[in-house]
Image (tube, rainbow, N blue to C red; front, side):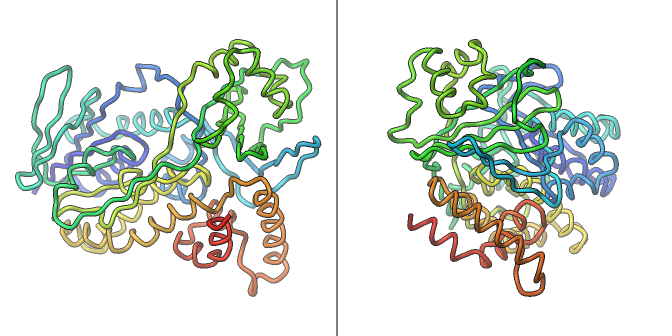
Amino acid sequence: MVKKVAIVGAGPSGVLLAHYLLRRSDEYQIEIYERRSDPRTISFSKSRTFPISLSERGMNALRQISGLEEAVKAISLEMTGAIFHQKNGKARLTPRKQPLFTLNRTSLVIVLLEKLNEKYNNSRLNIHFNCQCIQVDFAEKKANFQKNETNFAVDYDFLIGADGSRSVIRENFLDTELFECEQKYIPSDYKSIFIPRPDATVETNLKPDKIHTWALDDGTIFLLLHQRDETISGVIYFPHQNNQLVGLSNKEEVLKFFCKHFPEVGQLMPESEAAAFLARPISRIITVRCNRYHQGSSVLLIGDAAHAVSSSIGQGCNAALEDVVLLNNLLDEYSDNLPTVLEQFTIRRQVDAHALVELGDYAFPASKRLLIEFIFRELISKTLHRLFPQRFAPSLFELISESTVPYSEILNLYQSWISKVKKF
């Protein structure tokens, strides 16, 4: 019997899930609906974007589909460590055992879409762009969409909500019995920054294979990464209340701010980027915790729709891709019996998803004083684990970004640190 699957959201997790389901069986007929345009033909605004870092969790999910890992690595840049830049001009290096692979989110989606279309034709796969889901009737198994001001309905056997932190599918869960969902903004706002390829004559200590970090006393944190095209991009987080960026009124003040606080970047920032930075909207990140991810026997939330997390630990995309692996494993375990699979997905994912949000909120401190302590803790943990691996666990960030250890286990191991950050 053909299973008609409607995936709402053509982001990394939604498109990767299509790969997994189509590989499973000829019985799966996939329809993907995305509210935005096709990224392969329409360039998106970069005003709210920042680079994705794929760690072992995400790469493991890609690795299980032939050709995906290699294709993603080909458009990524390897990061072998992080450098914390101090106010006195000194820098502290934290090396990595395993590299991170950084790339633009849109580039990742394009690769996943291209590989999907290479393998499957429209006899089993159709992708619909510019289609906004507006309402779902769970009892009738019918989803309603709007395209170009025209409404239409879609029947489904299996509906996947992969439509992000402001999920319409999740919104429809609110009308169902005993569903609970907590949504919170993180205390920091952010703006993206884009630096063009530096002139060869300009000396810089921004090594291209490292993630660069700065922290100010007021809680402002700046993360910067090189891109494969030799440009540099990143994100600056600042307190929602009483932040310094609100007072910047022209490009000269922007340049002065960066030259004062982040001189390594200030010298590379052209006036055009200073003006663009000033004009970019201030963005906020929402976190999501749900008490379940399924509705009945035919609807499931994955990725940010289920457990949106702060970007501070770089796990949002990795966790979303890991959801796909878990779902596929459950389909194997229960022979594609959807009612059991969906219930088990909630049972097995919830504790780790809630731990993920907790780690995202508190693992990486906003306080400069605690950030310095965090760096020393990481160094000590790495040293002790290397000398006495049986007695001491790996460091917190090694576990988060260089392993596939469940998030709940990581939270239990480092609960004392999380509690300290919470109290500060």
